[in-house]
Image (cartoon, rainbow, N blue to C red; front, side, top):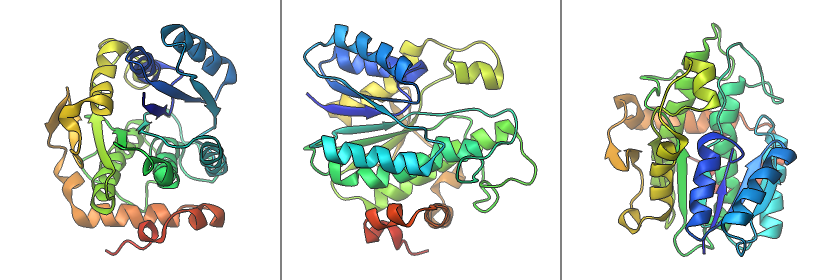
Length: 279
């Protein structure tokens, strides 16, 4: 039985992924912002797999402090995490800033997961087959201004979302170069009929069941055991935009992401080799 943390697992693809992984016999750490919504998902998962002792954790990814608190809670309460699925995401129609004065889309969709992943490396290292899975999108941007994304001069919701999804691919590819014995991959789940899709692009899209296929595959399949540093669509490796492959852009984003961490306590808990990335 694997212990699997899924960010944003109270809704949409995250919730469906949680249900399918529970159905396959695994224990889910349900993350969300709402205790009420998380409790409903836990009841669902308990009925699917009552022996797994599924767990709820609450944190607003809009807050670096809450991301730190979440990681501290997990380190105190868990012996290991086998799979980390960085799924949570938002779409903003207007410019808003996080608690830490970072544009909200990049803060929630990318930077919170950057921080959380680095903080949870010790728990992942305790697994026999540790896997990190990052949600991206086929609408990821074709380039990235690593200085502008945190406080954009001219905000566009679609551009901010696309930027955050390219950031997740750049992060995946750079992290793969640094990690030992932990695999990290990213994916496009498909055009799925979720609240986020309706907010950004209107109605339409495939079912959440379709959206869960690739993350479930990457979490469990023996076919991808040991495979790392790839972008998947429909359970197959695909080439992302050429910008995602640029080493210089990966390095620039990584170093800027470290710079945008607002709390020394977070930096103190991240191993030095993740902080001292050379460009």
